[in-house]
Length: 47
Image 1 (cartoon, one colour):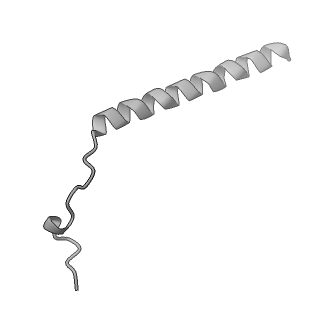
Image 2 (cartoon, one colour):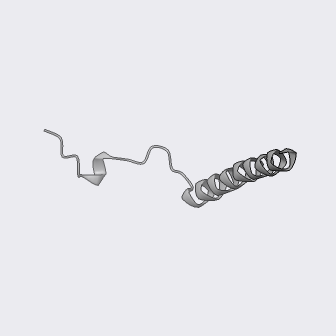
């Protein structure tokens, strides 16, 4: 039976830059929310 808690058995095969991932995720979400907000303002102005 394998020891699932042994860190030697779980080599990080794809190292990731966590800070870059967070920054990109934040920027994408901010951009999406900006578009949603702008659309809501335009719809509200038309009504």
